[in-house]
Image (cartoon, rainbow, N blue to C red; front, side, top):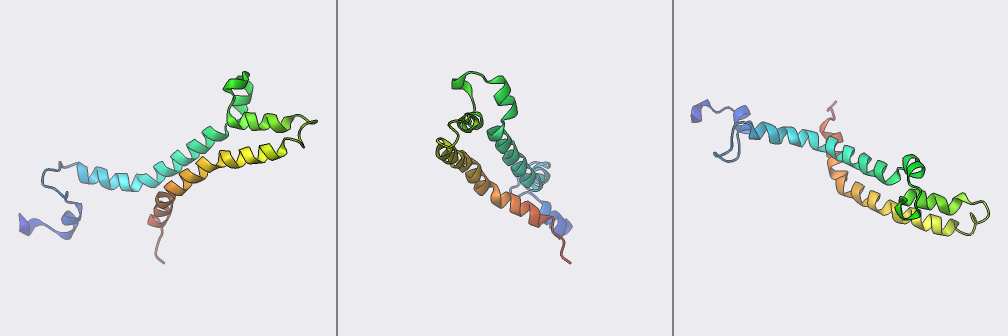
Length: 121
């Protein structure tokens, strides 16, 4: 059996002898798909946080409004727009913190996916 091993089969061989035949290919494929999943998760999170149009149409009760709709309500009134703009700006910064934190966490996967597809030339 040792004579039959080539570098290609050694690279694809499982780390433990108990591993089943499909585990190395699944884990290898997962490493390739991980950057795509990171970007999809990040964009889905940003879309969920910043969803404005549907939330502003369907959520009429003040207690069920999303943060984006609530922040828009601060500057929607022409008479109080200048008075509440500071509160709007502070709320926007606070609303951006989870998105930035998630991006910082997923950045290594995103950059790893971009550099994995690079061609030496």
